[in-house]
Structures are given as structure tokens and as C-alpha cells.
Image (cartoon, rainbow, N blue to C red; front, side, top):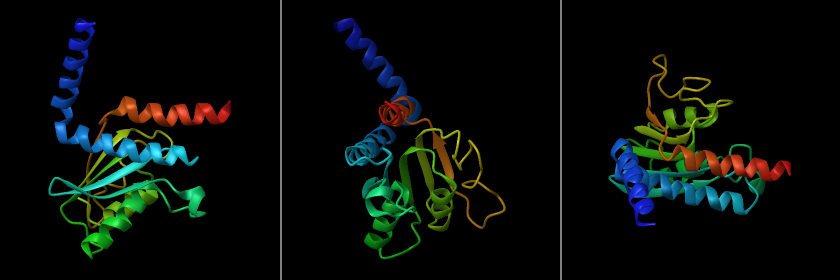
Length: 169
């Protein structure tokens, strides 16, 4: 057991070294938000917005609950952050989201002037950072958002995959 525990610590250290301790901490909080969505029957996506090393807003998918096709985790978090800062421009803020943002969310993140998007799992069907479209870093837009994928990607992918597997059964 001790050997297995040590191996786990080494793997965790490697993940932390690649992504940084704060990235892991903030993505873990985004995963907690995703779990809230799952609990109410929503697609389990969660997001947190960070400014100056502190979480200023959280969100999880609420499309079905709110009968609102725009109620994605990122949009919910953006609205809360803008309200908290009393500004629709979120300069100096980063977002941590469990899955690569869709085109709508990526566009909103660009418009809000988010500094960087950290996402867990890539979205090969609708991702708009790199997987399908390149909205976040598009040089034709007047603002570009840096992004980094793969933060806790296995955990982020697992919660969504399990959700849809359960839906099918």
C-alpha cells in the first residue's frame, strides 16, 4: 500500500509540475461545480473565474433548469464575475472550465477580455479553442484569449463520459 501511495504522489507531482498547483486547485473547484450540474440532471460542466489568485465567480450548466440555451457554466460564471467587479470587461481574470468552451462561450470569453482559458477535457465535437474552431486565439478578432488544455483532463473527461453513459442506460 505504501508503495502505491508513493506512486500516486509521484503522479500527482508530475501533474502539478506540468500544470502548477494553482491550476490543479482551481480545476478541482470547477469539477465541484460540474458535480452540482450533474446532481440536478444537467450536463456536468463547471467553471470558476479567478482574479489575483482568488476565485471571484463560479458556475455550472443550468440550460435545462433555467430553460435557457445560453446558461452554460462559463456564461453563468461570466455574469457573476461581471456583476462582482461591476464591469463587463474582465481584464486580468482567468477561467477554469472542465471542458473546452463551445463557440458561444469562447466568443463571450473573448468579448469579456478574459486573459486565459484553462480547460480540462478537449471537446472534439464543439470545442472552440483548438478542437473544432479556433475562436479564442483567432487573430482576426480584436482580442485574443490565451488557453491551456489538459488540466485534470482525465477527471474532467470521466465525469462527462459517465454522465452520458448513464443517460444511455
